[in-house]
Image (cartoon, rainbow, N blue to C red; front, side, top):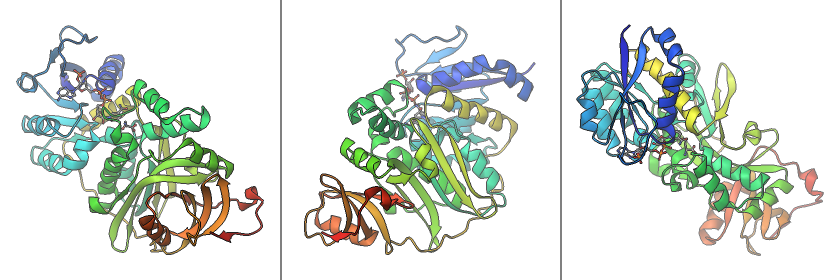
Length: 408
Ligand SMILES: NC(=O)C1=CN([C@@H]2O[C@H](COP(=O)(O)OP(=O)(O)OC[C@H]3O[C@@H](n4cnc5c(N)ncnc54)[C@H](OP(=O)(O)O)[C@@H]3O)[C@@H](O)[C@H]2O)C=CC1
Ligand SMILES: N[C@@H](CC=O)C(=O)O
């Protein structure tokens, strides 16, 4: 029986998960592909560290040794940083290998080049694991995009942030304790700033934007905010309003251009994101024929991510070119959200004489207010201590037992 020879770059949470899954699901690969899949080599940084791999696997810290293997069909990349990753993958494509990556930072920056290069070299690129861990969102979007016109994508795209927010709320743990737990579970990036400051979700949003809308917004125009400003006090105040903090990326086409934002928002029980807890991610796709669909599943971790990569392994072995005939059918959403209309916000740090309509002081120094985004942005520009979070959907004001709003 012929064999598909694979190299895995990286043997951390993801790389080891891919290796172990290839061993544990050997029969399924053979049944689906009609060929055996064999890991020929693994690239690591630290050669002194003990790894549990078969003796016939080449363990090396020199990528050139991998390129020189007599047979190499697929390179599966699970290392960190843009470089040397991009260079390695270009070389792999040049050698005629299909490539599969989990590295969203690298792919958000260089995905376009890699896809073009792959096309020229008649090989395929799998990047399902770059967005939302184990959820097959990229394959689903590819499928949806054939006829449906997508208008809006919203997603909880970072497992670490969602895990931290859940732990803080449910277990009353501190931010630092919750982050440490996420790191121990293998969810966080090597530099967790990427998770908690929203860079990771931003990269994922840009990858989704390219698939769904055929283009990305200007990166400078994307509002990116992480979860570091969310304190236990804010979480408790939100709970009093029966709301939960979720870190949400949204991408849509408005006014002839693609717009995106990545930031924490508040959602109520009626919102599908309300019940997305722990390391789970979820992606809502709004499109004209099917309406709204929600995909939900584990957004990080060893085997969920390995699942996305080994499904890609089947995909690249069965297809012969990168991006095939995707027609970018998208539709504009109406321009109602230009920041003019009044919305509800949870705001911390307002001083008296702010001139805003306060519905209630939910906790000391934390107010529920009604304002347009434009006015609030203006106020925050004048008073940099203010932090504010928009509430998606309705707020049940009956919870507050309040007669009337006041201007403060
Ligand atoms: N963790 C997760 O849940 C998910 C992670 N990803 C992405 O997958 C990638 C890997 O993440 P993860 O497994 O968590 O990371 P880890 O830090 O657990 O592992 C990284 C691995 O890459 C190796 N490595 C790093 N840099 C180099 C280099 N320059 N040359 C050779 N080897 C290198 C390390 O070697 P050594 O062991 O010797 O230190 C290690 O084995 C990242 O891009 C991440 O964004 C995507 C989806 C989910
Ligand atoms: N650090 C990332 C890992 C998966 O992409 C996350 O927490 O979502």
